[in-house]
Length: 397
Image (tube, rainbow, N blue to C red; front, side, top):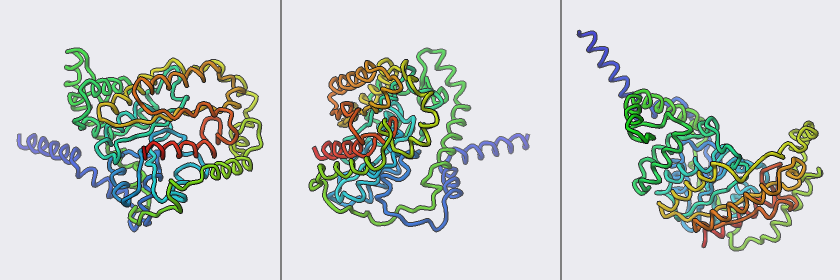
């Protein structure tokens, strides 16, 4: 009997430690590099934007180091945030702006649904109750976000902060939980019930120990893989200003510089960066002709996810700017992407923005503009300048 009691006590103790903050602290201790490199806290707005497993903590740390008089706008998107061009705001703003930053958050497969969770998580800390979302046509494939893709970018830290937000309406919260539960059934629990029937509720109660264990494992795994814990960097250096205030930027001159750079980097007939074209396109060019002829962007569950994002913003009193991104027209003509789908996507985003009283920056009219793209889908030199200027106008309005 004593052995049984001792075993039970040991299991209870181990479970308590596993679930306690001590486990998080241990993982951070094991993965933190000693004597880290000191780096400007401003870098937190832009460094590793695709790996914000703990967005609330990192955003609070970033804005805590921002001097008075500097505006910071939260910008959400996906893989385009990593475009390697000089006009990407992660490069351009620190060099040029003395009074504006974009807190960039997003990587591939972080789409409307993930950003709806993230928005509810960070909303209490937003400095100006505003957020901008880059809306990519590629999100709106017929099947919407796939379960595996969504799970690969899911953040338990953001999820738990969303659940803890008391200002999210019960209706929006439940629809968000149910939608995530479709893709990740393991999040369904008594604390975040996805059930619509009494039997479903009973099943969630029965599965609660396993679900809690699985969720905790995923939380600690996310902590372990969080780049800010593992990189030899400490964001403690002073915020470094750029050379000018945003109000004094000569946008005509900046666009001329962007065009000159783009011209020096593009010689193919599709408006793609030469190095990208040579490595990623030219060897496969014949096979790619017409391969998007059956693609649709006008019928997708992503539209429902985007509406969820806007409903979260409405509940929390946050002003939204949607930036509707274009497709590369020259490349899309080659791959056969139907004009009706391109135009239909643009029209649907315009309608959604209007119905939700969201600000819209519609860049879809620039599909054929020179030097607007870096590759087949991501913005380049001129495109990124338009995004930065729109974000600045929105932030100061």
